Amino acid sequence: MGNYILENDQTLFYLDVETFPEGIRESFDKLNNMVIDKDWRNAYGISYKDDNGKIHYKAAVTQLYEGENEKYCCNSLTIKAGNYVTVTILDWMKRLELIGQTFMQLCETPGIDVSSPCIEWYKNGRN
Image 1 (cartoon, rainbow, N blue to C red):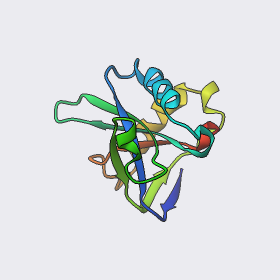
Image 2 (tube, rainbow, N blue to C red; image 1 turned 90 degrees about the vertical axis):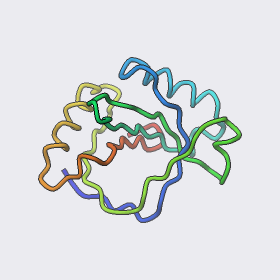
Image 3 (cartoon, rainbow, N blue to C red; image 1 turned 180 degrees about the vertical axis):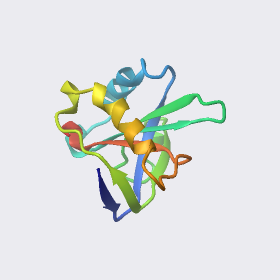
């Protein structure tokens, strides 16, 4: 486990995943089919629990210019600059089972704000 300092806000646009976790791949595939310059974007999974304990998930990509989300009829959100607790999973496509386990581990970290969303960062789709 480590710390990561996000130096600048990151603006993203996203699709809500209607069925979690089954619809995650479909939503990312839909985003990838919509956008150009895929190789220059990072992908993000944003998840949070509502008051009833239901998990909501957003499949998101980096917004390259202001208003790009509107071109694709998507909403946007901003990940605020700041300090984040992180765990890196290399070669994650071959180790998908580690993602859920890692979130559970992070949620047990003393001092973590469990009311904040969880963020998965897929750097240019490779890591």
